[in-house]
Amino acid sequence: MEIAKLVEDVAFNLLKQAVIYLPEDVKEALKKAYAEETSETGKTQLKAILDNIELAEKYMAPVCQDTGTIIFYVQAGAKVKNLDKIEEALVKATRRATKEIPLRPNAVDPLTQKNSGDNTGRFIPYINWEIVPGDSLELTVMPKGGGSENVCLTGMLVPGEGINILKKFVIEAVINAGAQPCPPTILGVAMGGGADIAMKIAKKALLRPLDQPNPNPEIAKLERELYEAANMTGIGPMGLGGKTTVLGVHVEYAFRHPASFPAAVAFNCWAARRATARIYSDGTVEYLTHKSLV
Amino acid sequence: MAIYHLKTPISEGEIRKLKVNDVIYITGTIVTARDQAHRRAIEYFKQGKPLPINLEGLAVFHCGPVVSKEGEKWVALAAGPTTSTRMDIFEDEFIKNFKVRVVIGKGGMGKRTTDAMAKYGAIYGAFTGGAAILAAKAIKNVKGVEWLDLGTPEALWIFEVEDFGPLTVAIDSHGNNLFMDVAKTVEENRKRIYEKLGLQP
Ligand code: SF4
Image (cartoon, rainbow over all chains, first blue to last red; front, side):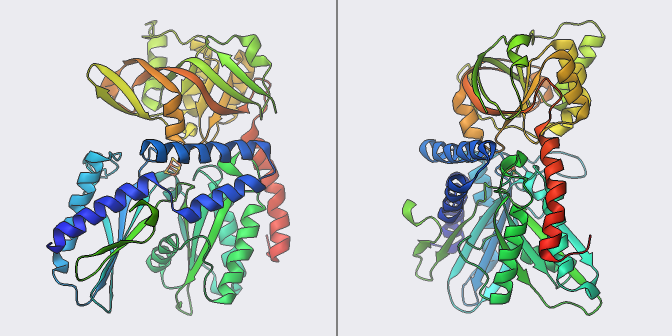
């Protein structure tokens, strides 16, 4: 099959998997949170979330009505041919998914306030490209909810204060976000790079499964520390109080300019949707996040 | 925490019994309204025009549902709550004029609404954000739609529901506001977190 059609079909399947079925690690984390939550009100919220997830799977309907802004991550093997056809294929897949699943149309022209009606428009779906060695193509989709996007934050911190300034930045972000991002959330935290780089890697960190800490032990320790601190806030599920405010914290970093300390916090809501597949050079497709479905 | 099953129309007496953290399930009629529907309803009241539906004793739901028309019949496919703070500027008038007893949404509402709820006898029921299918499955029938000219998300959707919930009473009719209580707790916890992490305020 020609690559454009194959990519379109795979991207369509990924969109469908992502919006209906939450990844196993997210479901596990929610179940664990439900078992461990001590606030009765918090438990009620987590139970409603778990019931909702089950119903979505049963009726094959999107797990949340806000199916988000569609973001793709493409890891393209340098030897893959016709890479110039992929963008169009992803746009087509998005249109098809919007119509057939259906997804809520969430792409609005900021100038005219007009909704395109099909989740596409200038730069949308957004595609993050990465060229890697090899001849296979890895596609990931992240339908990103608006409520949790609205509290994402970048900051240019004061470098002289060291890592503590980052911790403070993250805790304040969680407290200010309160109930808005539909907690329990997942945090992608980044330091270094630049304003844009920090947010880019923070958001990408949201793709990492919850059971995978950062391989760097120092960073993994920081992740644990921020996770515990965020859950000490008492915001709880849906901001109604409890000890489950975040399900996980993923930290990433880039080297920074001596005079800058860029930082970013990306929030994902409990409806932390993502799906990945790899397309091999012979045309076989391996679905990586939703194995049990195919 | 107590659990109540209420049927619309809900009386003031039933509302006064409820306290924050209680959980309620509603059977009967709930009506969606977002910013624009709130604004129009209040304009209608000022002009002495009746609303297309009498809201007394009913629940108003901050929600822009995903609906589809199957033949002549509307079906609600997804009906999760939207953020309620945007309706804060209207809700006191809305409760006073139309005597709704329950306001359903996510994220909570402020002091003005809390005061109106105490004065006129209404509560705020928090529905779990994003739990759109759970909500849609409790909607047994779309009884009607009004003001469709505002667009599907903004129209007044009249839903017949069965055991719609769980709704956590987050503002009761006695001046208690769970979101404000949580905010106070969070303020205190912030100090503990700063100490634990060795941060300067
Ligand atoms: S923040 Fe997430 S869970 Fe909440 S309504 Fe938006 S997409 Fe859904």
